Length: 596
Image (cartoon, rainbow, N blue to C red; front, side, top):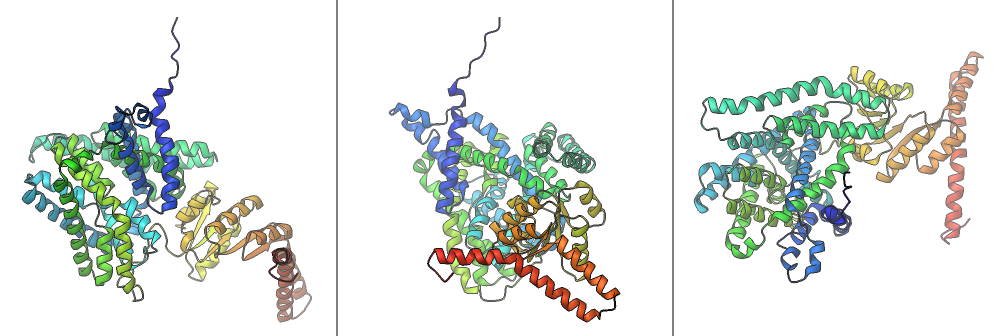
């Protein structure tokens, strides 16, 4: 008889500890207006063997708040990198790269090359590293933190400044550069030397893996996501999205590549499909949680005692990193026609190390390329500089404010995270399609969101800008450009669905112009109560159009008919808005702020 295996609470202690940490770190970081990533790094240091673990021998009860199996946590934390690279791939559309090619492939490439060269030269001269080791270390340290720098700039409202656009362009190129860097490290780790048959033998399975991912992705991804979307099951869509991320990662790992690279390629292939934004929103919670676990794991693995044993080494690397990157970025930005203040602001925002330094250094250390001490000292220095990012961006914003009133030197046609100015159309049936045609006729750009896969497929075949997804989800609206959209048009035939979309949009942008299709007068009243600019009831509009045709056919002059129709339409609009005005007067009277 088989003995049943009981569940031991201790088996899940590390998982419970991480979830509790996330529940504390994220709200606290939000309140303090810092990146949660810094909170997870700090929490990892505290919960690791160099933190509470070092005190648990003298204070036994502290062991309950210490991560006991760092290796298992690190293994699960690797999925955070996989999801991060997948979402980066989703954001790298060819349209965006083409629009920003000068800054991305000009300034971005120059920053990585020059920054890596300067840091590598310092490694050879000061740390006496070999050129290969110094080169890899220089590339790792040249990469900055997208996950911390971008939110810091957004908080200072500097994303749309000249410096903000330059920073975004550089970070975009760095994200692209990570993929070939990981491939190179995997080849180096295989032990191949020179350009002979050994290198070809090492590269063959990796190239084959890339081809499998590219071909299978092109042929299978869109049909699979279309089939899943037709089922209209959110749970099934989540499962399919996770399958794409993890499946692509496993295929890459089986051919000798990193799982992150496979996920990155899958993201690139999905970026050109109509399911891009819905997949982004679906995997975002998993990415956020697993990325938090990744940084917690990095904090646990940091040997902060090294900072006390070798303070000159760690602080020297951190100081050299900040000085060389700030100066090199500022000089390069000046060459790309940014003004002096904006160039220095960009240099300060990009001065610190980033999350990819952990990935590159750990992979290089695992491949036997880095001495253990060099890699650990570098990661400790990178962590210190990442904690300095909020202060650096604050200083940069103050410096850059002097050029804020001036006309930006360079205005690329695209802004970060899909923020190009387009009217949003939610619902692309007969009404939404007609609205789109009228906007196109008047040269007004637009983007549509639709849940019916047949309508999405038909519009895509006509090269319309349309995405599949549930527009009642605030994050999807934001990723489709709500933050900068001049107007939102809701044409859905579902009253409840239209109200949910309006409520989400108003929560994100209270000042947004919203024109909504209403089923009848009662539905229009509810939409006005939610804050729409205009609600157009189908029954009333049909009656007005019928009356217009009848009066013209009866011989009434066209001008008089049109004038009376407009007058009647205004009467209905005032009538529908009357409950809102009455409610506002009642609230003012109740609060003692005005007459009833």
